Length: 417
Ligand code: NIG
Ligand code: FE
Image (cartoon, rainbow, N blue to C red; front, side):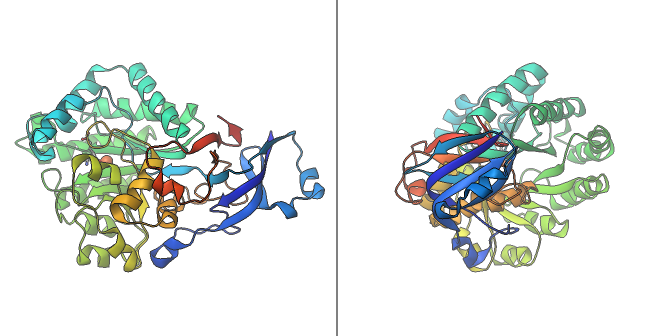
């Protein structure tokens, strides 16, 4: 099957040659073609350009039937990539959120056995089928808001059996969903209550039992650790990352959400694909990230929902860093996977220009997903994952209309969903 989208008011993030990421001042660069066409064949982008370059010869090279779509007045964007989510979970935690409104901090809730441990208990009681169905519904909603690539973490199992259960659910999601999905093993999300007095024993369990089993079933692409005050120390993180790397799992870690924990430096030291959260980022952290292959990733939804200070996005870009923005969709700190809202929050809370926020949620998150050669821009040969907007005058509407769904139709692997 082939698609021809014609008369596109603006074709956004259209690149002849794909870049790895956009950093610093370049984050303000967003290539746009006015009055454009987009042609796909099978699951790939075949061609694109200004309407006047759409010739009969170009169309005759397509071997399949072509469905034509008129996008007059509308824009086409590459699908969002969401490089940080925890969408496999059982039950929501809105009651606990009311405690938060009454004044308890995230750390206090966690200390009471709430938070992540609360989700772990519920996940333990849920069947694989129930977990799959709930995560599937979340994925479908994310796709309808324009997302086409997702990273999903384990981390609500916190025992070998339940971590494997989560990762098997993620594997089924990978097999069934048209989205590109990456699995991240986050056994080190919290210390289970039974190891409260001896957290190193839990770290040993992750190293000696969980990582080898996860790798032997090929259940994960990445390894994650919540390296932060009150969770795992830098030293514990290093031990787990070393073992993960030995088993072929590249790190993508949670760092500096609660404090200047040293997590960013540990991530860079172990060549993490990304370090995520970053509310506590200072000049030392910025210096560590510069020149590295690690994508600094900010999660605006979590900062918004928990009322945290914002990561210094502008300072980071001024220093020349790239920035990715992901949702962190999870039951405790961000019960939303709406990447359009993430774009708007990027602008409202972090004062990012629309161009910067779009780069941060497409090409830069594609890198943080390990998929920048397949996703994140409208480029020949990349996956045909894109969406057509409702009628819009300018791209700035994406930053501005924070409560509206701007997506009209969305396509994954060249197919309308
Ligand atoms: O990314 N920071 C650590 N983990 C999650 C929260 C998970 C939860 O509260 O259930 C996060 O925000
Ligand atoms: Fe997270």
